[in-house]
Amino acid sequence: MALALAPVAGVAAPYADYVIDARTGQVLHEKNSDARLHPASLTKMMTLYIAFEAIERGEISLDTKVTVSKHAASQPPSRLGLKPGQKIALRYLIRAAAIKSANDAATAIGEAIEGSEPAFAKRMTRTAKALGMSKTSFRNANGLTAEGHLSTAHDMTMLGRHLFFDFPQYYNLFSRRWADAGVAKVASTNRRFLEAYEGADGIKTGYTVAAGFNLVASAQRGNKRIIATVFGGTSTAQRNERVAQLLDIGFGKAPNRAVVQKPAAPNYAVADGGEPGGAGKIIRLSGAVKTARKPIARPVPGAAPAAPPEELLLAMQENIDSVLEAVQSADAPPAPAPAEIAQAAIAALETVAVPTPPEGTPQPVARPAAVETVALAAAEPAAPEPAAEAPQDTAEAAPVEEPAVILAAAALTDDIQRPVARPGAAEPAETVVVAAAEEAPVEASTPELPPETVAAADAPEVLDLPAVATAVEETTVAALDTPRETMTPIARALPERVILAAADAAPPDAAEPLEIVTRVSTSGGRQWAINVGNYPSRYEAERRLLQTALMEMNTLDEALRKVVPRRGGFDANFVGMTEETAQLACRRLVARNADCEVVAP
Image (cartoon, rainbow, N blue to C red):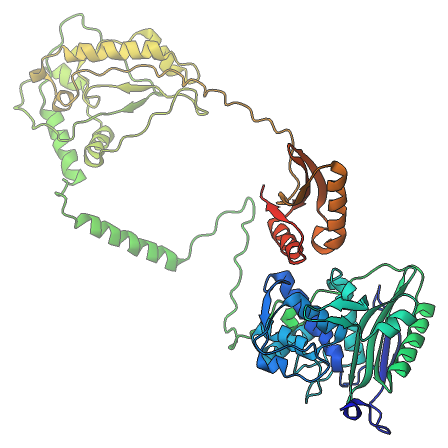
């Protein structure tokens, strides 16, 4: 068995290497870095990346009990020694895969997340494309040689950089020499290099006959961090020596100071077939535009409005005609034609008997030109009474104006009431005089209005409403003293008592209490918080906040640390967070067995 795992003499795997400045991604050295080669157990870096991503998304937790399948338990060495049907926490599988490079643990992780290893391999390839690893494809979760299971030195170096920046809370796994994997204590496959090279803190080894001895290593010295990758080493010692040389080259070329440029987040739109920076797949519509619609020009200030098209006018006219026909065909009783009503009103006015006023009766005052007269008429005109002989001078004193009769007829037909403007409006005030049978005034029932009323009517800006109301009321009462049998039909239709009262000015609205704004919030929805425990002293609470901030930098980077005194101690809170960030931070902290509770605003 040992001979089968040893490299075959005289058959060397293809060689490739790649060196970058981890802070900026700058390439410092490369050779054959885009050749597609067998990654071997470097594959487990992607298995662990997806596991960390699934924990962060809440798909699974570190304490989830995973049932080991027969397929996972049957994987060849390196192995943790899992048995079919065995239950083991995910955290132990992660330790075994990262530190011991156990194949059975890696397969169990993939099955726990996606249900089967082939489904998990598809997710691995999709994630690789989202990270920009364009020449990488996976067929399993552990890296055993399989057709189409290939990657490059460039792609694996990029994956190592993403592990460092995207999941710093888990990166320490790759620097451990030993770890408790639940069922056994496991040793790191990379412990020799970690102990031999100053500043080395990861990342992952790999070996198969087809791949040779592979290693992605990271080391930090001062402000510099270098990542180097080697594919196709001939032995563990030769590979480690070559990686050390590459790291030395990197530290020699990298500047002392550099602005850290974190790698971009995974772009799953690209992985699903979209374009870089796009939102997903591109959908192309078939068919060409046959007619380009011309936009309507903006109206020019001061220009005369354009006449509507003739087609629009015809359509409007047809629509209006159809509506009129529908209204006329309704079940309501037919109304008399305006022309018939007007002729009946003229005949009634011409044949009405007007009594002779006694001597000394004051003559009616002419209506001022500035006063608008509103004629009130009954809904149904009274039938004309038999005409009586009237004195000639009375008939001449009551001329009938055709426009006024038509106005009265229209009022009888449509029952339109025009609202009267409230005093104090922007337009000049109007004096409305309610006169009984204005079209045919009866001299005996229309006493002279006081001079104050006439003066008020001539002055549109200053109006004495109480005086006008009093005069109109006296006029109405005097007119009603006339016997009803001597009145005209329109006068008899009037109510027996009409009272006009000046409308008092509306009282001003009660002053609403002023709302005093003492602080304007600029949080933009960052009103959520998380609580990481209650402590007996302020010092312990602040210490816990600092530890948590260092542990969970991704989600707590912009949050504010706040200690709140309580009766039982001091609450350690992170405030100024959005709901989504608070929920995500708590999920990640709970996954690491830390106390966390989301505090709503």
